[in-house]
Image 1 (cartoon, helix red, strand yellow):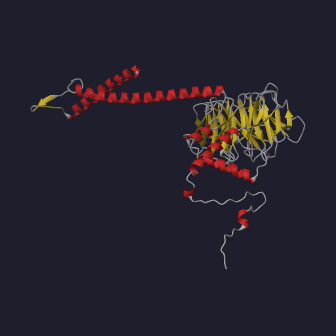
Image 2 (image 1 turned 90 degrees about the vertical axis):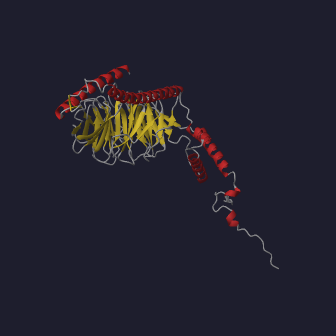
Image 3 (image 1 turned 60 degrees about the horizontal axis):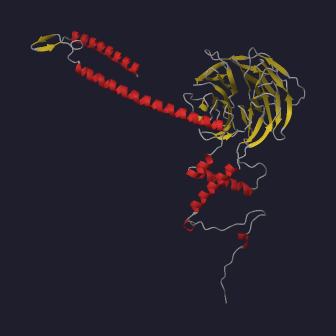
Length: 493
């Protein structure tokens, strides 16, 4: 006698490896799960709330400076080495992982002169410039507090940047100067023919060896070619820019930090208009830097906040702030794109997480899968009203909140004013045309403008020459009267 029984394979219901979750069988028929969409929305809302609940971005504060931090620089090829310079003339090289100082130069430059710029060469040496008109070269391996060499300029230096492959560096003062590491005098002076203003920042392009960019106090963004020693292109902004940064993934994209509270990205192939405007700061933007991935960038502003922006998204950045942090003059992304550094007027260099709710430390595979699932849910349901409100919610200081409200009110008022002025202008033009047409109809028999010469065979006729003269004279009289009427209307408006 044969009996048919259900037989289940045990291996299909047990984990394949130690630590794996127990496999579960599911019926994928959508008719069996009528509330699947409602459950997914609830999970997305919970994921958004958990993300905000665990958003604690502050990591550490690095001390060592007496005055405000003015500039910072990353060492190429190393994740943990960052140098910072301050207004007291000191330079500190930090180790981010151990939170210690690798090098401390309290009197790197004159005490009453600030360190205005820092950069690393490809072999790891440190260059610093100051308003004492000098550029100094430091060795990272030596404990000696004396520089390897000193380059002397003729005017205070505001910025410095090193070429990524050649032994050259550029400085910014009242002009852009190109230096060679083995020579004490600049090898080239780069300037625009009509520009006499101060250059505030200078940066080499990361892909094109001969392209150099600068921003100045005359509201200009200028591109130079170091092969010809001339300025190739220039753009005049509405307000001056304080910093610039080249995109690491798109060599033709440059980011500008402006005094008008905005950031702009330009494509150097078409400088007629910016590709994107990033609005959110309520004071001047002092510094900006791209992440190594090229997908986001960080900015620090005079409003005492650090903001992280997504490339192509002009609104809704991540906002970082603390009670003691003052005006942010420098901001950087680390080379692994996981952390953000900010230097402020209170003399501290702060370390932040690029992802505010990211967990530091070892993460198991199940945790990583759960995090990715929650991120996918938030991205899918971000247009939902309640989920989007939680995702966009940010707590900012009261002063920043009030300033943003005032700025929004002013922008709305200006928009309404421009719209009313545009409508009034269109209405005035229409009235002018209507008035001119009615005036012609009323004065068509006026002998001053239209007159006949004589009667021939019972009809009024004009010879051709006299008819043309009369037409020209009438046109001049008509134009004069219309211009006087237009002047009266413009003065009344």
